[in-house]
Image (cartoon, rainbow, N blue to C red; front, top):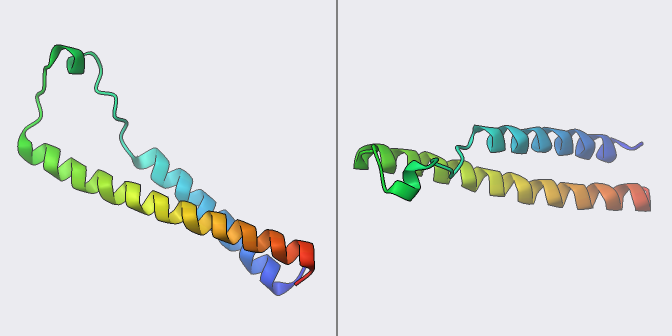
Length: 83
């Protein structure tokens, strides 16, 4: 195993763990039966604050997913071609 393959493998594992952590930190969209009845106890401030945090978490999850896919493909090519 070359140094490039080792570095890519470690990077792949780190990004995979980051994706899992980011996914678990995000809140679900399910608000229970209150959504059907139209009940909402959230103020505008709490909605806007949560949305900005949620949007940042979603953005970082997508970025990590793209990095993970790219590193995985490069790692596959490195192993297959013996770089």
